[in-house]
Length: 210
Image 1: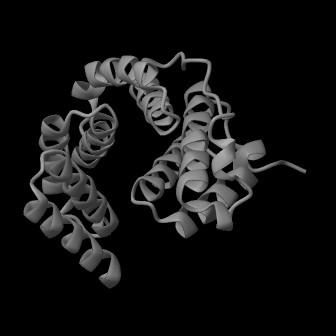
Image 2 (image 1 turned 180 degrees about the horizontal axis):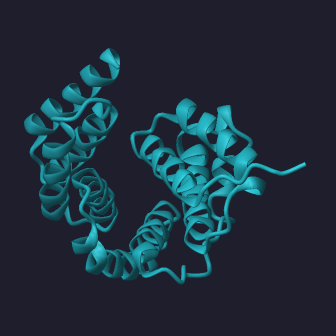
């Protein structure tokens, strides 16, 4: 009996859809897509790029699970430090994601020198990314890094860029709230307490409506 082979183009579309749901922090949909993709892995047409991209997106999914949804997954916040993304992909088009995810992971774990290195490399590949939402995601994550290394002016610069993109898009209200939260934190660092309160209240209002 012949086995139906799933074309690499179909898997590639599913992988990008999975990543988009992770990026928008839609955990339930991302989890569904992971389960769907995992059932197709053994039947998919062999393709190294898809295999490498799957590993990258799966790493990002585990980060999302551990950071924000440990009660809905089998991955806890304590597992974050143990997670590794060692081997860079052979496909050059995936190098941005590899370095971006490495930087994000290092930031969460407080490894700021490592984060700085990989953010710099990821930014050098950002010009190859056509998706404005991905650029906004990069700017938001970079603003978070700058908050941790006490550079509030750069926080405001990058978080504002990210917010301006997310604000006009359906399904990204949580990202707008997250931008407002980090903007508020930056304003506290700058002793701009009234403006910080405006951002914090905006973040809370958005999350209440979500």
